[in-house]
Length: 160
Image (tube, rainbow, N blue to C red; front, top):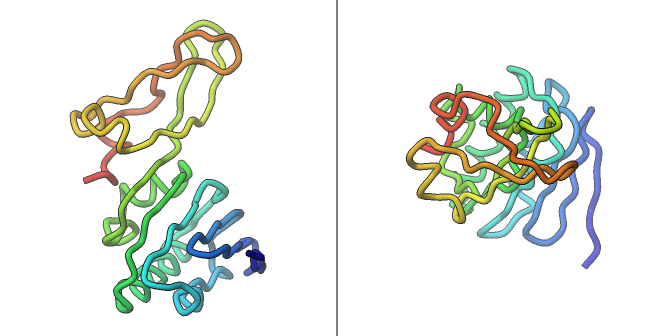
C-alpha cells in the first residue's frame, strides 16, 4: 500500500490505509477538515510528530474531529505529543470522543539528569494512570530510573 503524503502549511500529513500521521505544526494554515473525507469507518491518528499547536490550530483540530464524528468514524489517537496532551487537557473538545492508545510524557533521570519524552501505552498502564500515577521508566542513556517530570493531576486530565 502506498502512502499519500501532503503538506498543509507547516504540517505534513501522511495517509496510509487507516492511519493518518501528522508531523510539524498545527496552526492557522493547517486546515484538516478535508482529511475527514479520506478515511473509512475507523482511523488511527498518530500525533507523535506534532511539535506545536496554537489556538487557531486547536480550532482546526476540533473541526476535524467534529467532521469525523459527524461521519461516525471511530477515532484512535496514537503517540499523542506533549503539545497535543497539553491542549487536550485544557480544551475538552480537543479530545472529542476519541480513544487514546498512547501518549508522550516528560521524564527526568535521577541518575544522569537526562530529560526525555517517552511514550506510555494507556492500556498497559491503565490502573496507574486512573489513579493519577505515572509509572517510572528506565533511562535510555544510563539505565537509571526516570520519573515523571510534571504534575500528574494536571497532565493526565485528557484521559478523563
